[in-house]
Amino acid sequence: MLRRLLPTLIALGCGLLALTWGLVSLQRIFAQEREDARAQLASRRHAIEEFATLALRQTLGQQLKGNLPALHAAMGDPLAPGEGFLLNFRGHQFLPRLTRSARGSRATAARHYRELVKAFSEGSTAEPWGERLGRLRAVEAALDQGRASRAHALAEELLRYHAEHPLPPVQELPFVLLMLERLQRGEVTPPLVRALLREGLPEDFGGIERSAGLQRDLLRERWRFTQPDFEFLLAHVVQVSTALGEPSDDFQARAREAGAGMLVIPENLPGPTLIGQRWYVEQQEEVVRGIAVDLDALLRDLAQELRRRNHFGADGLVRLRDSEAMQPLESLWLEVSVPAWTAAENAIEQRYGLKTLLVATCGALAVAIVVMAVVAQHGRYRYVELKSDFVATVSHELRTPLASIRLLAETMERKLSKVPEMRDYPERIIQAADGLHFLVENILSFNRIDKGRWQLKPARVKLDELVGMLRSDLVGNTSVPVQLTADVGDVELEVDPSLLRLLLINLARNACAYNRRNPVELSIRAYPHEGHGCVVLFCDNGIGIPESEWENVFRDFYRLGSQGPEVHGSGLGLALCRKIMALHGGRISIDNSGPQGTTFSLLFPEPRHERPEQPS
Image (cartoon, rainbow, N blue to C red; front, side, top):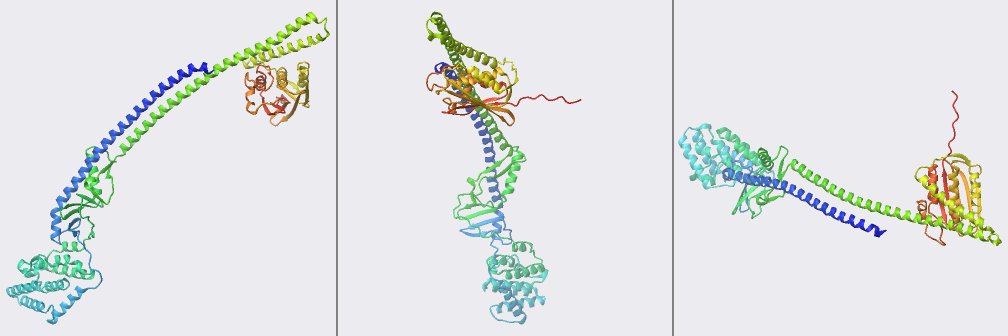
């Protein structure tokens, strides 16, 4: 059979190879289309991200450059706003200002102030303020007497003495505060005294290094005072400023300014750097300058600009790719998130998946078609072989009885009258003729049932009567004695008697053919079955059927392999039995089988009962 299938297999194999090559090429095209579409989206994304990144770098640099004057002003003037600026020189932080006060709760400056007030009112000359207080009393007396020029001269002498004999800030600032409180006269306050509060002393009185003004000095020296001392001096300075009509809003704002604390800056920055997404800094030699940035606001502005340029819609977002604590600007990169692009990427993958599924389906269908073609071709050749075997077998089975009939008839004609031993020839002729008739009957019945041309003629018949017919059919038609026992009681079946008789004789002849015992023992038992009419068990003492062949023996033209002497037959007997049972709505199967024999189970449906007519 393989030789017959070889051309078909070669043709199908070549076709399958060609189809496989085509499908693989098509899949490569689909994969290239996907990569091209993804590359196009990636290129557009990269271009917009590069534009946004460069714009952010430029914006940060411009903001720092624009804030340099304010940064330098905050460095030189404690009253200038210093929030949001960073200035670090040789590792020392000047901005943001360190707004921490000295530890502890002692009010040393407040105590010194109260001691000064007491000493001034009592006329004490005790050091370290004795000389200062004496000069302060002289200036105050001149002012009280209305001698302005005298008061101005004495004030100059007091300030020169103050510049030449400095005291620690915790002592000096309370004295300056007392001096302002005692000498302030509103609009007619001496200019030098007024300068002590805010503008600072002229150069010949020590200049800014000696006194930059009480407001500035207190802010600059804040770290030397405890928080209670600072709050005490702050309140008094504000009172004096109000009395003199000098501005103090900026002073109070700086006093309440929340510092950022000590910022850790590496010694050598690789270039402009974003620190903690909060500070943008640049280093020039030993100086590090920076500003606080609102990165979220900058990114929102960038996103708005990209929307204005129609690069993406209202749902587009811009964000940092990396969130490192310290990120050099040269490695900073922005990511653009656009839901439409994500949807486009998903659509690309979905299309690719569908195309891949289509290719895989085509391949699977091609393989299935090839397999089906091979199976169909194999079945066709198998059918041809079975048909040939059947014709050969039937021809042989028909030829042998006919030859026997002819030979025996001729012999009987010549010698029957002379030799008594030949008197059994007529019986043997009858057996051969009956065998031929049985074979022909099987073939004709099988063909009619298989083609659906058998007209079933059901009738109520007792199973015992069918068993009796089987006994008579077996008499003289077997080469060995047959013992048939039956236990069927009064079981009745609604069947076609001729077909069921044919079924039983086929089972009996099959049992005789595949049997090595003498005599052949057959038994038929019947019992009711719930939901069915009854079950008939047909048992023999034959050689048995392997369990793997229990279903195969009911196939058309199927015969078991030889397990002894050659057994003649057409392979239609059990197949015909199954068709007869199916025609009656029942089924036949092998209940058990072994070396001791085989039991066939015949399951018959429940007979149909005529319903009595209902009274009208």
